[in-house]
Image 1 (spheres, helix red, strand yellow):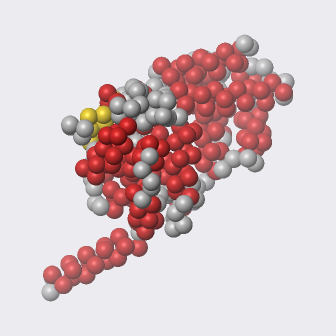
Image 2: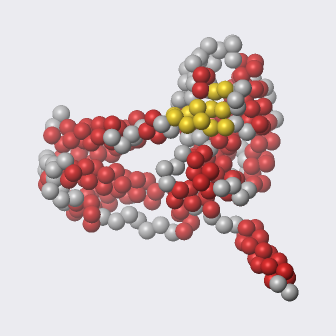
Image 3: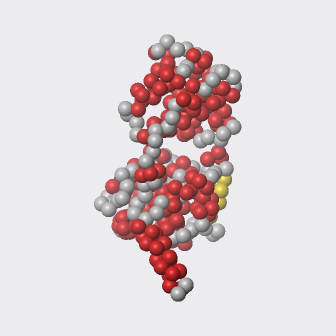
Amino acid sequence: MNSMQRIIKNFCSYMRMEKGCSPGTISKYSQELGRLAEHLYEQGIHDWQEVTHLELRAYLYQRAGNLSKHTFSTVLATLKSFFRFTVREEITHANPTTKLSFPRRSPQDKLPQYVNSEAQSEFLQQLLSLKRNFTNDRNRSIIFTFLMTGMRTSELCSLKRSNVSAGTQTFIITRKGGKQQVLPMATELVKILDTYWTPWYDAIPSEYYFCTKQGQPMTPRTIWHLVSRQLQRVDALSCTKQGAHVLRHTFATNLVRRKANLIEIQNLLGHADVRMTQIYTHVSPESLRSTVNLLNLQERDNH
């Protein structure tokens, strides 16, 4: 292991131990920084102290051709975090990323992708009409859990039987950074989950709540494919993205449209800052019309 790789390892340990980042996030940091180190080595640079914004800009330009705007921003955020760490630890004297800017985002880029109301009705009817067997009962329950709790995929995959209480109608999930949180179940979700575990709970020994027929935990990759497969069967989708995060966005958007308290939505989503939750307050023509009608009512009351 050369000195550049050793510093990457130290950075990843710092992000895990002090920042509480998940194993998946740490793995992405390690892969991206390893790719950068390899690129720099090919350019004859063997020390982080030698890196300038010009080398980083060249690397990002090379990477940009294969990346979406969002992923490009994620890569740059990784580099910025890493070089802040090197300056803090006095590995480098200056931060070469200070001259690098994130790509400008349009208002549309900032809006989360979700399943619209019409498509949701079709989507849920499709799920409820699936033939009864273990796989369909489990997959239906997984998708309803995402739609009615806003869980992240990592939180659902790590959910154990001991973390689920039908009596109190709650989940105990492990958030980012290892923090535990109690999430309530909606009454409708309790009924859906009952159709999953009543016939299968005793037949499949496992410590995990959602598992394979062999009792193994679900993986994020498997979850992504099963959710995406169901989403693709609905013609009226209003989003181009796939995977469970679309359902998390849909959960939050549904609550906003039903006038739920933003702080409570923040709590349910596990956001550290309410500003992260505010992206779900994107307005619709219906909400704008309601606002105008309120003004008209006020004018009539004043006469």
